[in-house]
Length: 159
Image (cartoon, rainbow, N blue to C red; front, side, top):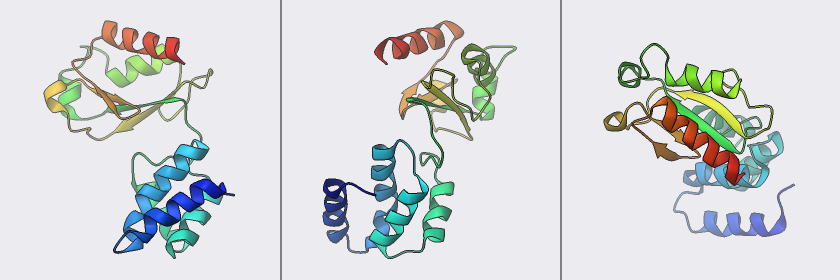
């Protein structure tokens, strides 16, 4: 069940839209922010708020990279999986493989401490910063193994 304050805020936001359905991603993100991921109940709530079917909401939720349909870590790492980041990578190992080994998780998995989830993405649009990754939508570029280690350690210390 969506908390009353959050629901009231969403209803007010939706009311200002020319076409309420255009707010679907914003509503999904707000509920994801509250629950940590977009739960089945949240999908139902989005559908009810916007006059959509749960299937329509599910189709959109599974399309967007930043909507998570299952629990994720505190820090979601989107690793660029494009040719440019491969070419500008760490030499014999990709950023993705380095992170997978460093965090001891599979792609799509979450670290045992619940801090990090590793997700590949086709391109993050920062080819000028390759190799690059996003962590909770913040861009990190010109990565080296040492820089990745520093970033991870800083995030661990802030958790």
